Amino acid sequence: MDRIHEILKKYWGYSDFRPLQEDIINSVLEGNDTLGLMPTGGGKSITFQVPTLMREGLALVVTPIVSLMKDQVDNLISRHIKATYLHAGLSYTEQRRTIEKCLYGNCKFLYISPERLSSQSFLSQLKQMNVNLIVVDEAHCISQWGYDFRPSFLKIATIRQLFKNVPVLALTATATGQVIDDIVEKLEFSRGHKVFRKSFARNNLSYVVRYSEDKTAQLVHILKSVNGSGIVYVRSRKRCKLLADELVRNGISADYYHAGLIVEDKENKQNKWKTDEIRVIVATNAFGMGIDKPDVRIVIHYDLPDSLEEYYQEAGRAGRDGKKSWAVALTTHSDQGVLKRHITDAFPEKDYIKKVYERVGNFLEVAIGEGFEKLYDFNFNLFCQTFKLPILPTHNALKILTRAGYIDFIEEIETQSRIMILVNKNELYDLRTQNPHADRVLQAILRTYTGLFSDYVFINEAVLAFRFSISENDIYEALIELSRLHILHYVPRKRTPYIIYTTSREETRYLLFPKPVYEDMRARMEQRVNAVINYALTDATCREKMLLRYFEESSDDCGRCDVCIERRKKADHTPQEVQDGVLYMAQVKPRRLTDFITTLSFPQDEIIATVSFLVDEGLLIHKMPDDTYVNPIPLK
Image (cartoon, rainbow, N blue to C red; front, side):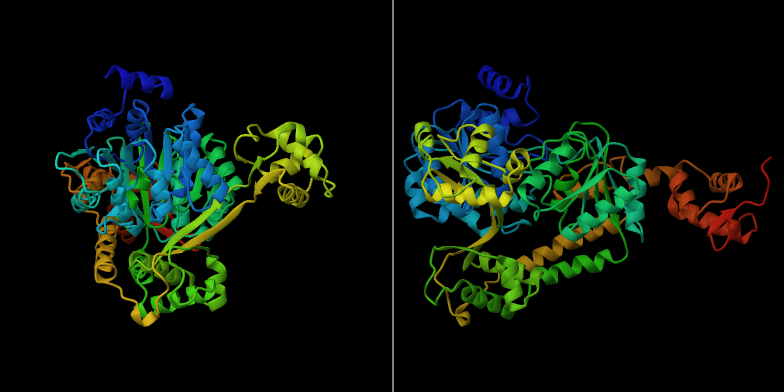
């Protein structure tokens, strides 16, 4: 007990653990297979980092979010903890050096993507490592009952055969009972396994749904009414920028973020938001995972997600510091139809899926019967342009082909430029090259970065260009020349998806899509979408109670959501008080209907009905064309 607190204090500076953290850590140290269900911001990573640091060997961390690997590894290294990662975007040399670190005990945490488990050579190397814990992050991805099923996760159980006495720790933020049972089964948990579950209730978070035909105006009004840092979630990259620009035009400090940005832009925008230089970030769901900012006061969903699991995770990024915060969903009459169309987009016709499979093979020049276990760079946008295919159905066809076991479609990975110097320092003095900028570029790198002689170091060509007045193109060409001369090894920045053929390329007539892969998953998506629609369009049940019921947890009304507040308002006033409030406001100056609704603390439907009644009685005058209401009776 004392030792785990010593480690927590030494590396993280905390004196006490958060709820459930200590229970999970002790379970792992006792050698139990363990499942931890901790809401977003609950501190999942500490539950495997602390027990790993207490013992010899390393933790193997399997995670589907490649973009987070570097963030987590950098965070550990900043705490003087040895950590590294493997994913498809690394060069062969980098992969080899990473494996060597782990084999020779120079690493405590090895992060891998589940696709790595398809490699027999990796598995043979893994067997030689001293693994003391297997960690499965985002464990709901292993369940076909979950909202984010990844077939590659099913391979995780094969590791257990290599390390039969090593416990498994599975972690996730959201899971229904059905998903929990599936995780336990698919990861082959031992009979004495432990499940730790924190309540999904958030006592400081108020859930609100706002109906409006003008979402943007409602968004601006809400952000001007609530102080503090915020996130606005949308579903399209294009809308990110448009909405951020609109907020700026309305005097709100804002920026945008999506997966299509280059690494430097992502880091710059993220850092400005984290340090409160930017107040609001408008983002797709690519933003937020692993972001440690506890003082987010409001999360607004401009577009509704496809599941309550996603909604709960994203909304849960508000108020991690325990202070009063809001999670707001904006809805309009068209949202139900939009969500229903997502189902159709997610499950295109089977003939279309077969057509996509055939064209992928042609695009990559993979012959029938070839390609097994080979990895190919896959320019998705060029593929769609070449064959004139719509982006969304094509993307989902590739995901279905992945679930069916024919390919692994690995989403877009961006890797930063990186270099390692291959010669010793003395040899640099005798550098001879035809490139006129090589010596200057090399000196710039040596003055800017450290550790270049022992490992790969990430570099930023744009920063070098600005700092040393050298064009980015000259830097690129100089580094290519130095790499050709074996002075250094330069891996330029690269952004591309990958495709791995998990079987040899088949003729399309032999492609099969089993019922669990297509029909059953479509039916489950329909259930999840209907749950979102019910949450957004129902105003008779406490919002938090609806969410907790979905996760099979019972609760009383929260008293904080919009439904509970409206119910309390109705019990706390008379119709005459509503009339008096409307008439008083209209006496002071002409008002729009929205002014009454946003200012008066009465239910919206009662305010609208009262305004209509007062107009009919002649106590309010509706003035056109400015669409305002005036009370002709003078103030007493």
